[in-house]
Image (cartoon, rainbow, N blue to C red; front, side, top):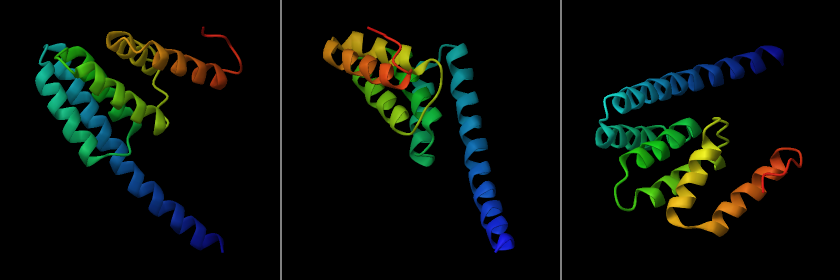
Length: 130
């Protein structure tokens, strides 16, 4: 029944539009905090955002980046986890791979770095990254 399908699609669009808009607002707020070097507050905002909108790949990527900018002990490991979650959720942000590699480098996780690059080679149609 086309009417039933259209009604279901409209429901999905309405539900997802709100979370995309909310995620965008959180991302804007985090980036604004970075600009004034309020890295601790940026992490707090990003953490809260990922708790409230846990399926937003972009928010997980932003959280990882916030950890990398804050640079406290243990932040590289937290960033690594956030970047992994972003990738699992399908993040396509251009900076994800570079930031994730930076986190692995800070951790000294060379095998993890190789695994990421091998995984990306498979996604890039065989283009060699190593």
